[in-house]
Length: 242
Image (tube, rainbow, N blue to C red; front, side, top):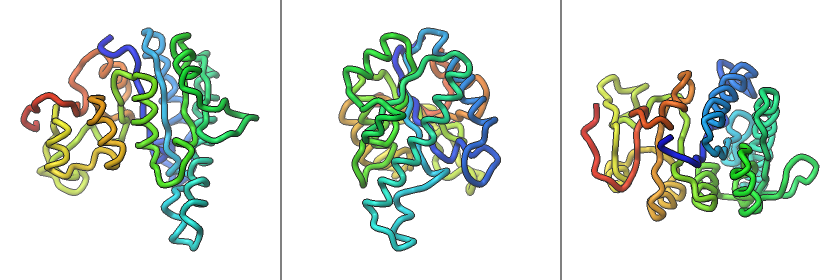
C-alpha cells in the first residue's frame, strides 16, 4: 500500500446520508465496510469525525449562547458520532478504541499520544473524539494535529465531492478539478480545503492531504492503492486541473 498509517477526516454532515439531521444507519454501514476493507489490507487507520449533523459550536452565538459553551457542546456531538461509528465497526469485527480530548471515562479513553500509537500498532482503528479538547478549534484542526502527533503518512479528507476544484462545482458548471496542487497554490488561489489553522499545520509539517469522494464505494481503497482519486495537496509542483 502507498500509505501505511492514515488519518481519515469525516464531516458530521456526511453521516446524515439522505436525512436532514442526525445519523443515517445506512451511511454508517457503508463507511464501516470501506474502513474495514483497508484495515484488512494492513493499513493503520485513525479517524476524526465532525459534529455538524448534530451541533456546531459556531451556532451558539446565533441563539444567544456563549461561544465557548457552544464549542464544548459541539465536542460532545463529535463523541456521539464517534461512538456510533465505533459500534458499527465493532459489529463487523473491527477492533476499535475511542480516545477523547475531554475526559468522559465511562465511554472513552483519555487521549494519550503513546497509547494511541500503540493501539494503531496492534491493528486497532483509533477514533479521536471531542476535537483537541479546547474551544475555538475545529475538527479539521484536530485532524491535522492528531495526524502529526501519531506520525500519519497522509490526511484523507472524505467529502461528497471528488476533489478540489477551481470553483464550487455545485455552483459553477465550468469548474475543473485539480489532480495535484501545492500548499502554496491553495493559499494563492484561496481555495477552500480546510480551515486555515488546520491547513497551515499540514503545510508546516509537510503532511500531504488528499481530498476525495468518500461516498463512492471503493474510493478509500483506491486512494491507498495509489490511484489518482481526488486531489493531492503536497509540497510538490502541481499538474493542470482536469
